[in-house]
Length: 328
Image (tube, rainbow, N blue to C red; front, side, top):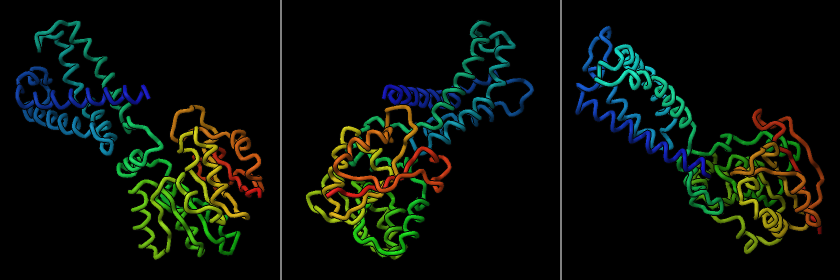
């Protein structure tokens, strides 16, 4: 979390810095004209152009959606104006009336600015990280910060349903997100309940299900409220990227919930990820098979467990399929 705050502060500072310097290109152009290398043409035009881009990129740096573009744009801009810094150093600071030490000392700072710009290129500032709040997740969907979403149905799910070759019955998809997997279950004529407390995620799934002419029960609610309405109700629960997204302190509660809402023949079909993450920070939070085995003891038995060859490349060996049967 400290790193997030540090990045947030540096982004604000750098954004202000570039916007302020960019404005000075228009209000005090003579200050920049002093360090224009003589071999370059159109001095005043170049000063105004660089000022325009400093303002534009400084503004874009402040927003999650445009930060990556701004960061790489700033890297290119810093490289483009570097000849002016070299020229200043070659004059030993005389071009601006500063000391040789300052003139030459500016050069390494240009590299530092490039490093900082690159550091910011893949930063989504999330300061209010309350994973139990729908506001947190809704903001991620609105801003498109959904790296866990592969943008299509999970191949493991498609293969699972093809092999079953019949309707399962009532299926609950916990933390359904954009709902690609929920739609796949619906294509096989299952009675699907897709649950998420992000309004944006549910709306996205609603639009896609209408577009694909699929009938899905959309439940905009916290998954931990389901036991109030769906006791012993579902034939199958599908889990993927929900367990790793909840507060780890609620993992026992998660399996208690699953146990309550499954009927006596109920199955939990889960793809548990990430197994190889070293950091405890999240989401996603690190998942341990040992921890899962301890939690499910007396509630579920493992009827199948395997690493699937159908996992997407970047998730191979970091996710494992567990088929769990409710113990009655």
